[in-house]
Each structure stands twice: as structure tokens, then as C-alpha cells.
Length: 333
Ligand SMILES: NC(=O)c1ccc[n+]([C@@H]2O[C@H](COP(=O)([O-])OP(=O)(O)OC[C@H]3O[C@@H](n4cnc5c(N)ncnc54)[C@H](OP(=O)(O)O)[C@@H]3O)[C@@H](O)[C@H]2O)c1
Image (cartoon, rainbow, N blue to C red):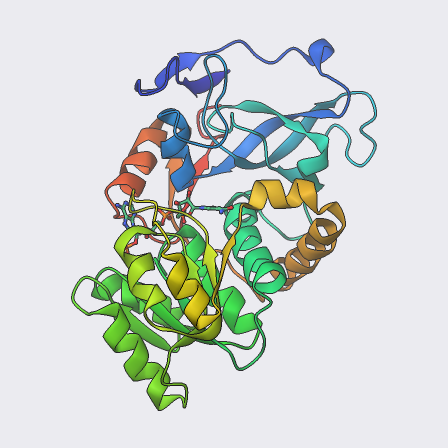
């Protein structure tokens, strides 16, 4: 099969003819998938550097979220069979024509959901939905501040917070990105390239009758953005730590949490699914229903051919990507 393979952390992935996975070597519970599409994530750039939570032992392909057709199943897999269209969350390996996934994270595709939408949906919507609904417990009427709001997870956070009945203040870098957030439901937008987050947030929340700030912060950026957020939260606020796209992990001054009764909440989607299988099943079914009905629509800004996957990663790194990028892994077959 064709695949992008990284031989060592920090080295550029190579476009190679890799051996096909061996069907007879499938472990119980595993599913072998002919990949149709793979969603691109910021974390793909991190795993290639060895800076992600998961560190493959040997050569590997990046790619955490795929859709495709089941080629074979290992013992004990009964919920999908060869020929079924599925979406899946492998540990890595999606930048390839075939991938093996843990059957616990393989879901049959609902009717009418295409491969590209399925590949763009799982991590971005899953992260925002579970973080906002189950971890931060966002209530109708609350004010949610979403950073990086034109990016993969940020844009879905705008949509999910609106679905939960919140008023959304979105931040993004530049007028075009702010417009994308507005088009996806943000009630107020702040261009953090040119505007001060704290001043603008407090100005907006004052007009909403809550001068001290927002109820919930959704932060996939970290660094200075997080620090500014801490200065515009209402007493009792919840701050969701989603990621550190800025490259800087914030150091939280505990005294401010204490004085304002603020809660900092870490959220890691992959671990959450494993730790909360019942909530995960219920929440994903809910989300899939909304995807199937068209209530949520992934914004796919670009589809790349598998051999162009490095261009997709470059767009993530240089911040030109908006919404989701998808790799069509069938194009080279
Ligand atoms: N906790 C979880 O389970 C989970 C799940 C998915 C993703 N994440 C994390 O969330 C973050 C965003 O992931 P994503 O896939 O949504 O990425 P993405 O599509 O590339 O979006 C990241 C956004 O961050 C902003 N940003 C600020 N500084 C940046 C920098 N130095 N380099 C690149 N972007 C920068 C960019 O918006 P502006 O240009 O508008 O600033 C960009 O739109 C990552 O840290 C990722 O690891 C966490």
C-alpha cells in the first residue's frame, strides 16, 4: 500500500510502498480498514516530533481519524463486518491506504454520511461536544469564550456551544478567520491579532449584564491567550484546557483560581472515551444523529490527495488552515 512513513521523530515522513497489513495477524478486537479519508489534526504535527501523548515505538504513519470500508476483522469483533462503511479512531496510521484500529473505536457510518464528512467529524466535534457538555456542563444563557475559533476544534466549539444554548464570544487571528467564526454562529468576534482579549471580552460581557467576564473558556491555543482569559472570567468560571497550539503551556497562577473560585478543567478526548465508555457511546450517538440530520456540518476547507498530505500539514503549521482539512486516501488507488 502507499503510505507516508516517519522513521524517526523529527524526520520528514517518506512517501513509500509499505507492506499491506497481514489479515491473519489481526489481534482479537482489531479491525482492518481500507482508508477512504483521513482527517488532519494539529496533533499530527506533534506525533511526528515525538511531542504527542502517544509515541509509536517504530516507523509509523500519522493520522488519528479515518473513514473507510472494513476489509477484515479480528476475533471478537461482531459490530462490524467486511464491506461495512465505518469511521474509526486508530492510535495513528491514517495517512495510508490501510489502517488497523481498535474495534472499540470503530463505528458503522450512518446512512447518508459521506466518507469525507465522517473523517472530519470525529475528533473536532467529539472534543468540543464532550468538553463543553459533559466536562464544563455549559447551560443555556451562559457566555462561552472560544479561542482559535476558525481552527479544527475551535470552530466546532462555536457550533457546540450554540447548540447548548450559550452566547459565544469567538477569537481568531485576522478578519477572514473572524468572519468564519461569525458565519458558524459566533455572537461576537475578537481579532486577537489586533485587539486586546481582556478589554474586548469585558466590554462585550458588560453589555450582556455580566461585567466581570465569561462563564466558560474553551482554549486550544494556550500561552498568552490563556493568561489573558484568566483575567476576563466571571466568579465560578470553568476554563477548559484543550490544547497548546501556540506552543506554550500556560503556568496557571493558583491564587487567581482561588480568589475567583475558578475551575481549570483538563480535557483529552481519547482518554475520555476510554475512561467513560457509557457517556462516550451516548454522546457519540447524539452527535452522529445531529451529523446525519445536517444539524451539524463539518467545514472542510480543503481535500488533499494522499500524496499531497505534507501540504496539509504545512497549512496547519503555518496557520493558513481553517476548519478541517481532509486527505482523500482513495485518490492514489
Ligand atoms: N484535548 C483534546 O482532546 C484535543 C483534541 C483535538 C485537538 N486538540 C488540540 O487543540 C489544538 C488545536 O487543534 P486543531 O486540530 O484544531 O488545530 P488547527 O486546526 O490547526 O487550529 C489551531 C488554531 O490555533 C491557532 N493558533 C494559535 N497559535 C498557533 C500556532 N503557533 N500555530 C498554529 N496554530 C496556532 C490558529 O488560529 P489563529 O491563527 O486564528 O490564531 C489555529 O486556527 C491543538 O493543540 C491540539 O493538540 C486537543
